[in-house]
Image 1 (cartoon, rainbow, N blue to C red):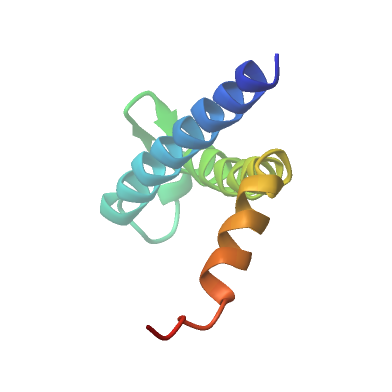
Image 2 (image 1 turned 30 degrees about the vertical axis):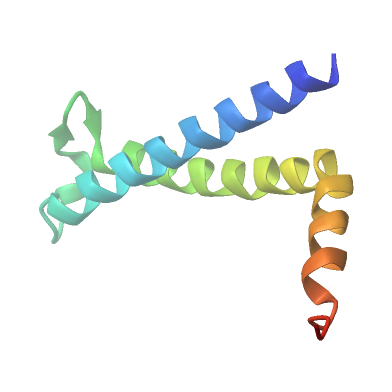
Length: 89
């Protein structure tokens, strides 16, 4: 069951990252100025794209925190292994 939860978190993290990148590109190329928030771009208004971008960013923070918690044993092992000074021969 643990591997399934980890897989779901990684999938959601990747999906939120793709959504963040897509909404960022849309917002970068969207028109600016007064009244531009009501223009429809790819089926959504600019204000909706801003909301998608914001929620995707918060989702990434939450899923990244969950990812660290779920993989803390591996992370601690890695940090301990790499933090040791190199042994002389």
